[in-house]
Image (cartoon, rainbow, N blue to C red):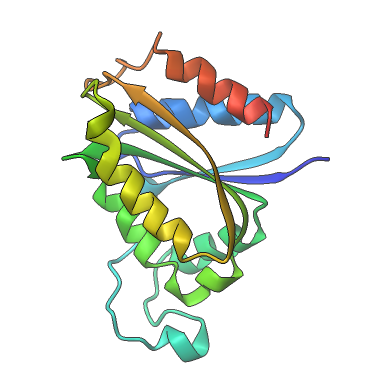
Length: 177
C-alpha cells in the first residue's frame, strides 16, 4: 500500500550531508511506489514560536509565515522524516524551530517518524543530545511512533557523506517503509 511520506530537510545547505541522506531516503521510497514530498527548510520562512498561547484555543498560529502550509502537510502524512545536521551535539536550530512551531496541531500528527542526522564526530555519545531532544518531541505526540534513526557519522564538510554506510541505510529505509 502506497504511503504519503513528508521529508523535512532542516539542513542549511542544499545537498549538504543530511540533505543528501534525505534524498537517498526519498529515492528508495519513490522506487517502492510511495508518494513523497521534500520540504527544504532553507527555502521557507518559519519564525520562532512567540509563546503567546493563542494557538491553544484556535489551533492556528498568529504568525503569517510558511508554517501553516507545512503543518497541513505534516498532518496529512503517514510518515514523517526529519533530517538535520548535528551542531554542538544536538539538532540544528532550524529543526528545533520547526518542532516548536508544531504546537497548534501537534495532537493531529500521526504515523511513523524517522530521524536522519549527520555529524562530524565518530562517537555515539555525540548523538545523545540529538536523540534525547527528538525523543522528547516524540513523547509529546500521542499518535506518532519513532521508527528508525539513520546516522551519518564522520561527515563535516559538504560531500563527506558520500560513501558513508548511512547512504545505503537511508536508501533501504525509504525502500522498506
